[in-house]
Amino acid sequence: MDKERYRLDTLYREHSRRVQATLIRLLGDFELAEEAMQDAFVAAVQQWPLNGIPDNPQAWLIRTGYHCGVNQIRQLSTARRRAHLLLPTDDALDLEPATIQDDALRLLFTCCHPSLSMEARIALTLREMCGLTTEQVASALLMKPSTLAQRIVRAKRKIRDARIPYAVPDQEALPERLPDVLQVIYLVFNEGYSRSMGSHVVDVSLTKEAIRLGEALAALLPKGEVFGLMALMRLNDARRDARQDSAGDLVTLDEQDRDLWHQEDIRSGIKWLEQALALTPTGYYTLQASIAAEHSQASSAEQTDWGRIVRLYDALCRRNDSPILALNRAVAIAMNGDPTTGLQLLDDLAHHPQMARYHLFYAAQADLLRRLGKQDDACSAYQQALLLTTLDPEKRFLLKRLNDLEQSA
Amino acid sequence: MKYVALVYYQEQIINAMSEQEWHDLNQECIAGVERLSASGNYLAGQPLQPTETATTVRVRDGETLVSDGPFAETKEQLAGFYLLEAHDLNEALQLASRIPPARFGSIEVRPVRELPPKADAGEIS
Image (cartoon, rainbow over all chains, first blue to last red; front, side, top):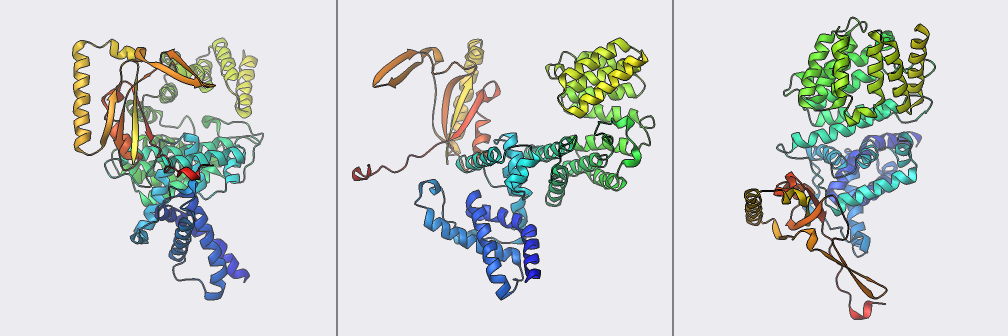
């Protein structure tokens, strides 16, 4: 019996998301699909120990859930809040493996639809795609479960009432819509990356969830940018143990102990990158991953091929008019042996409204001034950066730099 | 499914247009409506006179209050609406993106709400 129960846990973990994704398509409603999925697993608990596990558990669960859902619709269709529910036609029960696989993609494109707020997209994706509970998602995003639950309910209502389609965009619309999905996955990853700093401990690793999502997407939709995003996440994640010291303080790339970088992750990242580069056109994430790969393969900051990094930033800046990319390009130019030009480019950026409040802009400026021996100007730039940051590890890092500078002066 | 596309723009942009530009924009809108009608997506629509012609009516405590101007002063003003028939939000957004003022204003797309069936006289408590 224990063995059976163990199997059921495994089956739930393995199948619940796929079953749910298909039930949403068949029944046309998120809430109803979730109830139907629970009913199907309850039926499995009752029937499988007696009758044995069916040959195709996933199809069994979907079919059972579908019938539970249809019965629910029959009972509820007169209630006002379920007035939108329609009985599916008999030919709706399409359980072809390829269709079931596409349901996961449909769900992802629906959860990441640009007509939902970014907060809702992230919450829905973690809840529906990664199979996290509302409590787990709330804890990972440092939110109250009630606030998060409300946000998810509102998003599902909009999906239903505005009829956000449960569909993968066709080939024509795909290039326009794919970045929406990639952006959500990358934001989840970065959320995990920054949340892992400092003292806050979470039981869910958002970086791992993002990588899992990316892997699933790559299997379903083998596009260059999907591979590029996977490469970027793998390469950044490889540095997870080197980014902070034992006291929890931030360690910048040039000062990181490169022996702490996880070589296995780097190798995986490079492999993803090679797949990405084989497919044109080369996009945003692939270029970012190429930069990360240069860092990952250099034995030190000095040994890095900064010339190539500058060229990659040139390519990125031609595509995206982003002041943050321009900032990184200026720093790369400085690292490539020309701090004067780097500083000049930063000065040109100073009037940009986004830069005026961005602590890393002043931190970069301070660093270049320090390298050029302009101690006083460097000190005031560090002070400006300090005023703008709220994260403790970053504050401590900037204070340390400022103290070092004042002592050497 | 029916959607309303509400067209907003800054009236000052229109005011600053030359006669020719205004003429061209109107002709473009007429062609757009013809295209939407031909594809079966157009149900109704109407451009509006500028907000300076607007009057707002409210009834409070049984008293009718009439005031000059639109109900809210906003950066962009309501300039017209389309009632569209679309299969889902993606199609509605795609249709809305081709409404000419989308280039300099904003189009708000909202699904319509169907009123519930009229209750029988005896049913209202």
